[in-house]
Image (cartoon, rainbow, N blue to C red; front, top):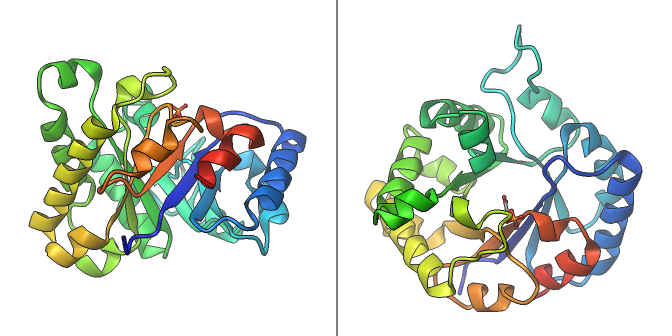
Length: 249
Ligand code: PGA
């Protein structure tokens, strides 16, 4: 496969500075010989600390969200300029916890995608269906809608800075993983959407990560599937003992 595997850790709202530094240090050492692409996305307050630890390593620095505006009167938000200043290279956008707990919609996510790309950040755009939607046979349709709305107005040139993460909401933090076959079917359909929107080359090149209870013992079977190009890992990214084996699957 010409696409490079991309393993990302989403630390969510976990860790203090000291804990984050210790985890980052262990990952730098443990992934030194790792051959895939790697990312960690700590909370905003930890970014500077983690940046110092991973500097010069093969681990990219990510953020978990950002404001849709560059700056201004936006209480409680964090700007793309502030993230770039700390060395952030990638931002996770549209995570299901943002969509469902903080009511972010596709239009808002699309605005963030444009702003991030304008500033040269890589975007990990998360999509995924709820359990009810899967049970109603709507999983592909929901993902198609989230991908096309999230990327509305994004040109082919910028698409090379976009990664899609397919994260079925019912699999996040629940211990339930989509079977490799079910995940691959959605990944194939997302690749098809990219093909229709951009073209076959873009469809073949785009990295599509799977997320939702990825663990050391299920990662290999997922990654063996044709359309699964990496993982966005939550719970198992919080400990070197679980993240390193996933990252070096
Ligand atoms: P999980 O989270 O690995 O804990 O299921 C994945 C995610 O939300 O990115």
